Image (cartoon, rainbow, N blue to C red; front, side, top):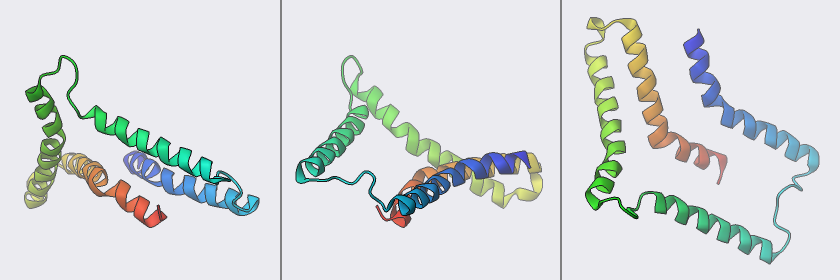
Length: 129
């Protein structure tokens, strides 16, 4: 029961916060954080651009880091995703030979990886942004 709650609560928090935000928006008439003029729209767009630049800069090698170290670090995420998904597929094929606790753990890792790959983008698409 506890593992179900620890999986469901973080998964539902974004939807719950958006629902609460929608209720507050309906009460206030959606007059919250909308830009009031062109200058505010431009400043918001510039802030988004700076944020994307900062995120892109995190994956570029700088300073004393060798280029091959940066390449290995960049490959860690796809390799980890592949290993977790391969382990999940293996556990599905041989489910009768593994303990239930092991199957549950592997399934939780596969859920995390699946959300990493598709969840955030799907949620933003469904949300309309």
